[in-house]
Image (cartoon, rainbow, N blue to C red):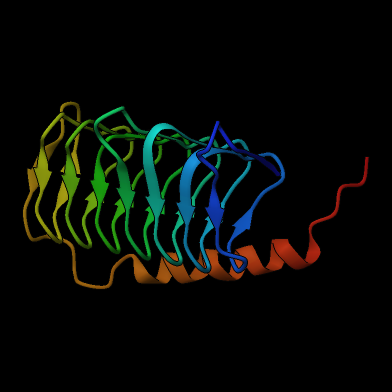
Amino acid sequence: MAVYALGGREPRIDPTAYVHPDAVVIGNVEIGPGSSVWPHAVIRADDNLISIGARTSVQDNAVLHCTSDLPTIVGDDVTLGHLCHLEGCTIEDQGLVGVGAVVLHEAVVGMGSIVGANAVVRNGQVVPAFSMALGVPALIREGVVPEGTNLVNAQIYVERARQFREGLRRID
């Protein structure tokens, strides 16, 4: 895996987390227990903190960044879908950010909420707990996500990471 310190900022990755060899992790990054970072994901914390909680999956080609004054905070049991982009925002526990979605500066995606595929959550926008954010710009449908909806997906990725840690081997 490509894990880089930047000056005095060095990633802190829990030993039970899985980071695919083709992912990139740079700078002031925390990755919690049981979490996974998949191929070609880029987590670059050059100016601030990027914190990823426990049992969270950062899927293929996702990009997580921060700004000099805004950290990016991702809770526990979160699914960050393929090709999504987070920057200077907060994703609370059990959230799901869909394929190709973008969550921008100072936005907050509440507990258990879903950001739909290709949606754009604007600067400062708040998605209340157990809601959906859909479209460009994202429109909110409050209270429509049943509690625990994303837990099954989060558990699947914890198991998938175990399988990759134990069985992935390069053959070229």
